[in-house]
Image 1 (cartoon, rainbow, N blue to C red):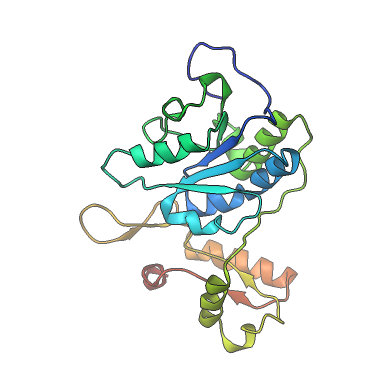
Image 2 (cartoon, helix red, strand yellow; image 1 turned 90 degrees about the horizontal axis):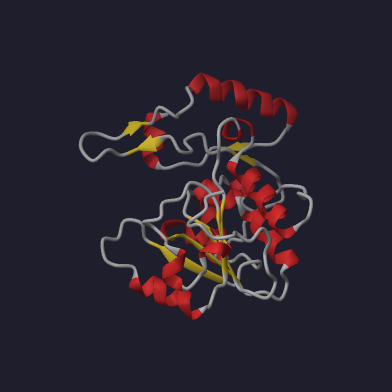
Length: 239
């Protein structure tokens, strides 16, 4: 955890103070943190609960029944974020949980009236990053603050009817009615990068295609379902 100042930090969540969760990570990381959001709301049933996330990925959580208010931050905006700060102040949040790598320049709890002693920040240290995924650490983190054991892990997605309709149009006809289960794997996840200058390229984080072929072969042998490979048109050209 990161201590913002030399104050005695609270070690639990207060069910009388509205809670703000902050996840300014990528699309997949935000989705994988939904079990932690669900756990918080299950324990703090009557406590107002909001989430601050990147504007580009807000659609992933806008239909989530465990989150009452979704606030968005455009990390590419150059103008002062006074409007967002005013929106957060209006909700009178009294404590905040920050999941993942965090930069104070993106969000400062003190500016929206949240005392520093009620700021809980999850920071990944050493071997923990390699052993446990960010989402599992976030779930452990929330369970610790709530004084409970870590529950079983499974992420949730609540798409709108419009999103479901758009997604079905991209599927082959045999999968559009929903009667046949299938496996969707985004092989280009976190792999495509567009530099400031020059042509787009694959990131060094991208798995070689041979590794994906081996992985898909193992999955197909264990799960006899059709496989769908989603991704952008740019990723498709590289693959």
